[in-house]
Image: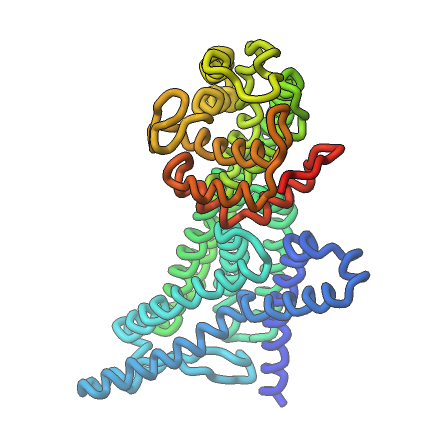
Length: 495
C-alpha cells in the first residue's frame, strides 16, 4: 500500500509539470498557428492540434528525463560489459544507477556501491553527461518541429523551462529522503511559480521572436538558459555526490540552496535586461516597417509616373518587383535584402523620365540614333538616384544603371559576369520576362512558355545562370504573380 501511494504521488508530481509545459506551449505556439475558432470549424485541424499536444508529452522535460534514464541505463550496461571484458570486475559490477522504489521516495534512481565513492560517482556523472547531450539535442529538434518555431527560439524556451524544472528538483532533493510526496509537491509548486513568473515577462517577447526568427535579440538571449541549465546541473551533480558520500548536512544544503537562489535571481535579472532590449528592438522594427512602407509608396508613385510616361501601366512595375522578390528569396537572401531588391526594382526604368516621349512611344523599330538615346536611360537613372539617401535608393541606383547588362558582356555598358551587381542580374530576368509577356506599342505579348524558353536559352549568355536556375525552379510562382497583376483589359498574346 505504501509503495502504491509512493508510485501514485510520484506519477502525479511528474504529470503536473508535463501538463503545465503542454499548456504553456499551446498558448505560446500551437494556438497561434491553429486558432481555436478555425479548429472548431474543421475536424481535421482539431485532430492535427490534438496530435501535436500528444507529441509534446514525449518532448516535455519529464519525457526528456525518462528518455535519458532509459538511454543511460542501456549505455551503462554496454560500458559495464566492456569493463567486464577488460577484467575490471570490481568497478563495473558496482558503478551503476538503477531504478528503485520505496514507500518514502516512490520511484527514484539508486546509485551502486562503488558509485558512492568519488571515482565511481564521477564516472557515473560523466557517463550521464555524455548520454544526456545527444538526447537533449534530438529532443529539442523534435520540439521545434512540433511547435513550428525556429531552432534558436525552440532552444531558448525549452532550456528556460528545463532549467526551472532542474531548479525545483535541486531545491527539494534532500527532502525526498524524508517524504517523496511532500518533496514532489514543493518541487511542482516551485516549477509552476517560476514558470508563471517567466511567462508574465516573456510571452510578448517570445511572440516577437517568433515573428522575427533571425533577430539579433534572439541570438543574444538564446545562450542564457543553456548556461543556467548547465550550472544548475553541475550543482545537482554535486548535491547527489555529497548525498551519496554521506556528507550532505544542513549547512551544505543551505549553501547549495543559496547558490541556486542567486543563480535564479541573476537569471531573472538577465532576462529582464534582454527582454527590455527586445522591446526596444521591437519598436525599432515597427518604426522601420513604417519607414519602409512610406519609402515603398513614394517609390511606387515615382515608378508609376515613369511607366505612365512610357505608355505602360503600373502593373508592370508590380509584376517586376514581385518577380524580383521571388528570385531573391529563391537565391536564399535574408528578408531585409529581399525587401530592398523588391522595392528598389520598381525604379529600374526611372531614367526614362528624361527620354523624349516620341522615342518612348514610337510604334515600330527605333533608328540607330533613337536607340542610342533610349540606351542612355540607364545613365540618366543612375544620375537621378546618385545622391538619394538610404539603403533602398542605393540598391535602386545600381539596378537602374545595370539592369540592361548581359552576363556575357554584351549589354549597354559592357559589364559582364560578377561585375554586374546581383540585384541588377535578378531584375534583368524579371524585367525581360515581363517585357516579353506584355503588350507594348511596338509588339504583341508572348505566351509565358515562349518567354520561359527564351530565358532558359539565354542562360549564361544574357542572364546569370544561377538566377535562371531559380527562375526555372519557381516558374509556377512567377506565373501566379503574372496572373494576379495582369493588365486590364488583357490582350491575347500572339501565338
